[in-house]
Length: 231
Image 1 (tube, one colour):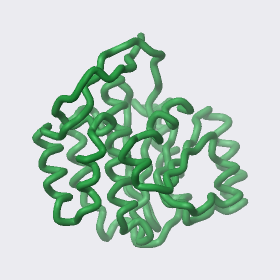
Image 2: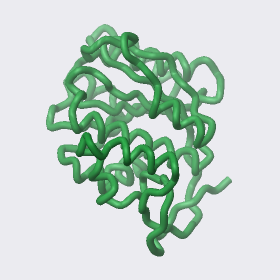
Image 3: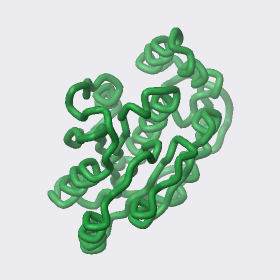
Image 4: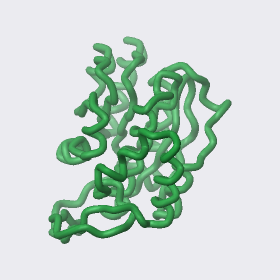
């Protein structure tokens, strides 16, 4: 069945992060204001663009893998969390199944997001002491693939890696992973929040990517539209 695209018609209040004004998102860069942002998010009182619906082609489920390693403990990590939330919000509006996991050295399991209330799991989940502080892509990707091959609601999901890209995958892992990927027919997309380049092996595994080198790119959500055109 068809889902919907939107045109801007004015300003309203809510918590749709793909529509929230840049001035609101800018408070995420201020540690003293960040909690106010999340409070307004939960109260659905953020200033945002008012949009009008138009039909567009239906999209499938995906699993978001969010990097919470030591190198992401910065303004990019904060913006990445907001970006991930926006991506999942859009998925829910389009009636797409979506799950997420946190990763660093290790990975959490995949948490399924069924509705807006479930997004609180993404905001509040405590991943401390579960995933370490380094960065390894392989455990996160393996966990996501396990959820896809389990034949549940994420059986036909694609994978989105939201990271600063400071890691690699081994040639041995890549060879096996490409076989599984081809057989299962999922795709992997990268959202890179730094100027760090993907490793050669990781680049070979990706089906598409967008890069965020400026926090303003996240606040304007140009990356979201670019990613949406690829998925």
